[in-house]
Length: 194
Image (tube, rainbow, N blue to C red; front, side, top):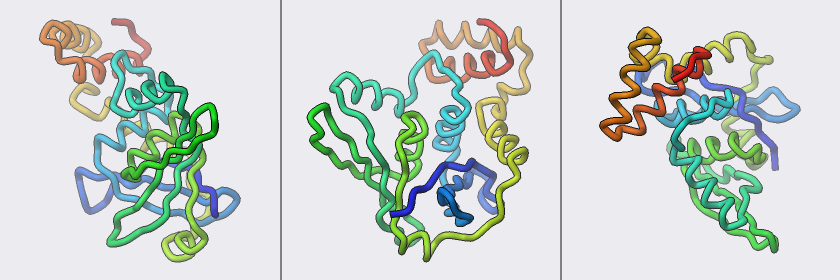
């Protein structure tokens, strides 16, 4: 098995509503690019940057439930790629080391792995067949793209601090907690208070 690490996210050149998640071989130069959606890219980017949200995303909710049941994510395994679909398993275990394996979309698996520091593995065959050899990525560009897909690229990024705080209060009053979480994340990203 080959261990992979999450290198970052970048824009998809052909699809405006998609991003490319880049997984890299630990100790090697091969990379596996994976096309994912905007929501999944934002979830991964938020976790990579350690941005706290006032309300949990679905990935955070799943991990809270796992913690409550004393189950933890041990590893993620990409075991097959077919027609650009990545087949992935989540390997959980409980306090008695009983293992539970669950199928997951690659974007969800990586979002969980980033949040828990769980290792990601794939087979030698997959890295040989789908890995692309690159020199080390430009870390400044990688960070710029990761920052760019956090909630600040939404229209929220163009609002003043006062507009954000007003919008946040309206969302809370209307019980639109998902939007409120995005606004709060943008306020926090700017170093403000709400």
